[in-house]
Image 1 (cartoon, rainbow, N blue to C red):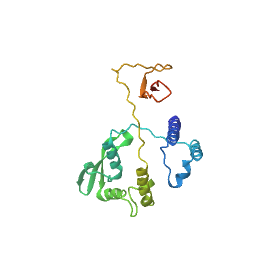
Image 2 (cartoon, helix red, strand yellow; image 1 turned 180 degrees about the vertical axis):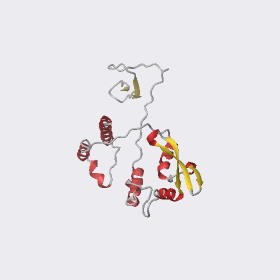
Image 3 (cartoon, rainbow, N blue to C red; image 1 turned 135 degrees about the vertical axis):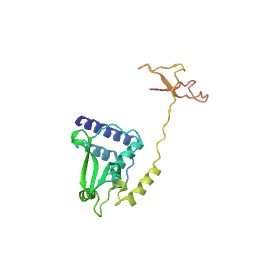
Image 4 (cartoon, rainbow, N blue to C red; image 1 turned 45 degrees about the vertical axis):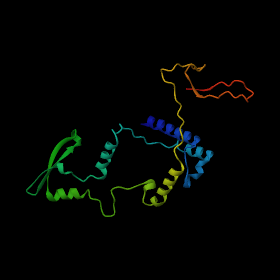
Length: 208
């Protein structure tokens, strides 16, 4: 993980620098001073002495798996109904997983009082909440920051991307790069202009 942390840090900082040079970053509020190149470069230098914590695991299969994963932590109860096996003579029997021995399923029987005591350990005290929002969704700054985020999104539309059409495999490649011998794509041609002092203009190419 140490090597992965350094690689991720380098690529992340390089991506920030590239986005800054392309004018794709917007700074608002207390971050406005970073819109100057020297200030932004100084900020990036402070990121390298810090150790970045990187956690890697296989990706989820899709949005439904992510929602299911989060729901098990945010909206679960102490014990689900299907784990309750029996209730007889003031005794509650339920199943549980023994993670210390290969996650084997086992059963346990407790008195109703002890079962309720353990169940109530999972009930939050008054004043505590299960889900807290951070960042621009935090209760303290949401009224100010959320409208500001919406305003910035409206004022900064996605940059226009020019798509260059490549020739299909069936089309013959007439021009090749003299250095790498790769195919050259015609980006734009200039028509002949009789008023120009030049009698001929060659097409310009983009080597890719």
